[in-house]
Image (tube, rainbow, N blue to C red; front, top):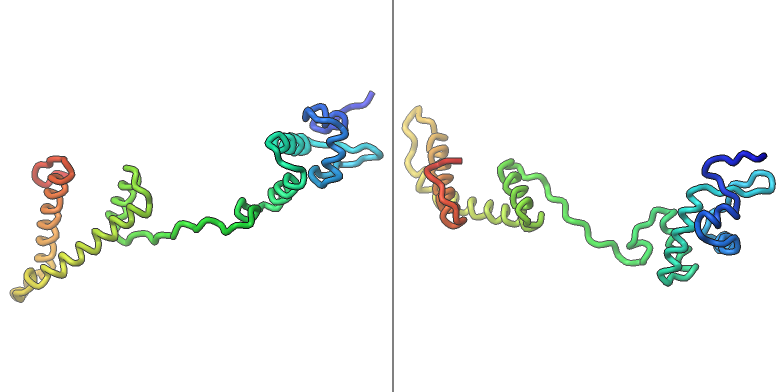
Length: 188
């Protein structure tokens, strides 16, 4: 009595397990579609990888592919080639890598916009536009805010902090009005 090792098949067993014929298995070997079996003595033994490969070949044949085309696909798969390499076309352009925003709140806003359905590029474009407009606003009003010299010993940054809070509240009110949401005071 012969003891069969698990997951090993003779050519007859392979063909039966994959729903194919011995003749087809031999043709696929000759055409380079199916890897050779592990030969011990005069018998070739096939594994589950062979069954998977044989079933893949059958699916591709049922979709109208020719054996030469299937061989090219399987060779590319074995090499780890991507679809672009296989088709001989340029790979799709990669998304430009965006550097993390140095302002974590801008990063939070971009992430929130993406959560709400904006694409990454659109979210970063909104942040860039806000940054540009805020820079222009600060540049425009800086002269008026810092026109008068600070009294001796006064904290120069105090004017900046007060201006920042005032602008934040003005922007918050405007966003509440134009965003269709009412807020009271400076609730956050």
